[in-house]
Image (cartoon, rainbow, N blue to C red; front, side, top):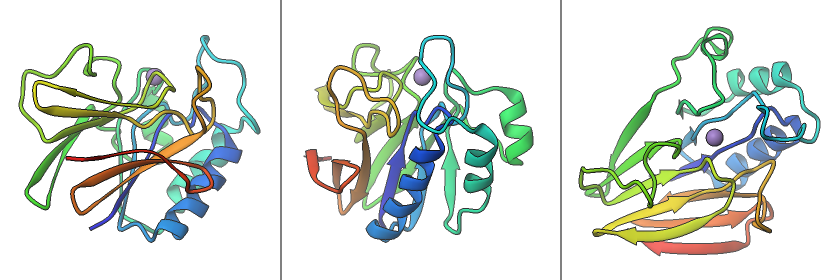
Length: 178
Ligand SMILES: [Mn+2]
């Protein structure tokens, strides 16, 4: 079972088109959006090809099973127009691992969960990182549209107990066993 993770697209049509290419290239079984899908918010400049309606159409047209996690920029209208619930968090049970999915503005390596998971996969800061806290591996996927602190535009994949953060070309940025 192979998962692909995207986060912080913030309404960039360029980024969602890239995500669709990546889903095909990676032959992912399941797609996870980790929040901040449409709205760019007052903290960010307008991303490339900012077009929330076209991003929404692309998400609705996905031909893979998917999960959408709610970010701190995601609103009730986003769920209504997408026709989907944006989950506050979710858990993947795979290969004997328990992976907690969250946007990352509440739970992250600096504010760890009181629960024990194999890994926590999140976004929010637009900077990728892998940190182990109390035996739990925290993976920050970073942004596909607006990375910060010189991070590359990136996404992540899970397969066979390994999480790999990659740049948009598919080059490995960082990787960890969980
Ligand atoms: Mn955020």
